[in-house]
Image 1 (spheres, rainbow, N blue to C red):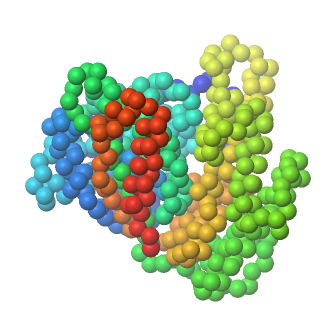
Image 2: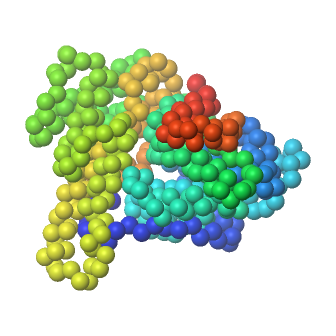
Length: 450
């Protein structure tokens, strides 16, 4: 959303699923061309897809309900999930002589904020494909009710990303949000109340990207561009990984120092001096300060982990922009509208601090150092590019393309919810937390460390 055009608006409406078979067929047909023309993905490989074929067969026979919980390292992940269900699944089912009925599809849960930056047409398209919107950071009753209903009664399984957002790391998972686990238990609960015997599963789906040819020249060029943005002169353009890492680390140190000074000078924050802490400690303190600056404005107390705090700040900002008291805009005076716009602009500016933090919650400080592969270099350099783009007020969605990639989608072992349902009835919170951690462990095991 462009900061110069922020206006107070009526509250965000829930976008209900409205599956349209004609739209489904059209998008399914166009997907390979879209992947070729609009992404760097040249090949998509599936592993253990026969497990998914067996699950779909059991689903279609009325024996099970399941949710596909997929990793979310990239904005291209939804395309990969579409390719998995629409292309790889029927191919493998035919090879394994597993009988499946058409159409092969899945509903999916998506963040209500996506149409705000991607455009209202995306919201319409997602709805036509059977997607159901949800506001991640509030008790979104219509969104929760819709997803719960789809899980229990829809003609298709459902899919969701338990990380909640992309984290930009091919080989690291962000802490999972507990909502996916809760949906699993709700489904089992609703089936039991209806005296239905279907079993319930959550299926971990790993998604990972590999460059077909290591894009070292492109990585070096992007480093050079970032150094130029930072005002760091650079004459060394070697592709040696040790030298590239030294430049990457220096760039990270530079940006860290710039942001520390920024918050000291303009937001009167107290931060330890550089010599007193490690890089990782400094980064953690800086992210905490960024959130506190936004939380202070919205009068929020820091509760939970970084992701929890980001979600609460996002909702607080939306409440200032998409306002319940602006439902009938035509009844407001021009003064009321003007004041509403000022509040909305300020809320957007404060949310900017949260957006910076959001990009770095998975950063460890040793991701590249431990394994200086092209993929890990690219992940980190692109995250720095995102950071600079946000500083400059540019759209970080349109990232540089460093090279052609192969996507690997791995279907994990399904996790039974019914086996855990007795534990859930005894202690709901503990059961949800345990399932969330087990799902995170399962997704971690699907990562191939290059």
